[in-house]
Image (cartoon, rainbow, N blue to C red; front, side, top):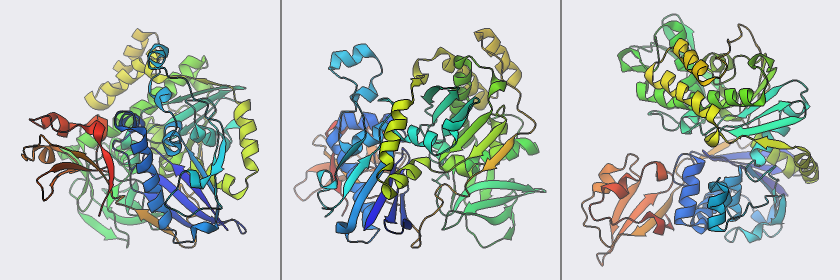
Length: 542
């Protein structure tokens, strides 16, 4: 009999097939991106609310179905499916209310008749969700949220690290698009999240990609050359070649090819450029770019995007510390989890501010969300322990969107990363706001890497990647004059106008490529106002 562990992340999904008797991983399947339009949870929420939760639910289930088919097994032999993720992803997966997650204001919720949904642990038959997969013997396990806005993924990053055992101030961060984090002071736990954006995981970068085979994840200096480090098929770090970042001249090859760069690669390259003097201040680059490989480069626009992501995370970390009442120098531990937390060079992250440079100890973990799902698959009784721990955690939640402290920090971060504001002026601004100035980065910190990669075991059958999810969304466009302006305007080539034999026209979107709420250029450019995205329906690609 089999079990499947599933992590529904904001930037992509991860699934592992596990043999229950031996508890051995057989195979891992990942997606290259999220199936819903947009690059963050707010885009996904907006899509689900404006287009329909049923449509979003169907897209997610169809993606999962296509992932599971890559396991090439008899699904009647699947006994257990454990699913972990943030409240938005898990709600869309189960097709339950999400509006309480979309509207923070009580007055708005009351006007809409929306109440906070209890997201307790659930165990239910897989047949309730999966109609096209014959899984008669499978139960679905969904771990609990701590509060309605603090989900199973936040619980996982606390459970799968040493965070809950610490008696001294400790900070844990799941580095990703939505960067969940928590600060523990004694028995008090304060949770938060920072809308870092997709750049932290390599999306929204000109040559960016998620952590996957061929992704540049790190760079190291060797004289005037940089050693480019990529991920291999087993997601291990490997040397690829030596390159001059100014000219693109490659000195030595080591047998591994780079196809793009992930978020940790951008962080590492930028940190090295600052350290080596190639950059005097952000976001200026020599010749406007850094060359990291054939057709792979980092632009000043990429530096801005990465800087915004790093800035959001640093601003959130500093806000948690300041609002908690402790001093910066009181922070003893900082835990880094997630793919970016695992592959990042912690020293580079400390110097740039992505990891708190004032923490005395940095500990790196991998994908804690998938790790918790694996535990629940291999030992069903573990769910009772997880429920007890979730009830015991009395978490205060700090909403960054309404925090004046965060707003002030992030304004300074934006000025620093996108306008080149000196740190001296940054501190002057903080003094004006009545906020403690930036702490000094410790010269030395204890750095411990607990994992070599974000998913420690991919299984005997290796890693499979669903690169093109292949789900199309369609909407009739009866007013369309066939000018094709929408197609030309789309920055991701996500839209195509189709005309059938009867002359009826339809706008077809590749859901994986569409930028959703953060774009809508196709809607705005249409001279006839023909596109109504709220009427989109799922249509499988041929």
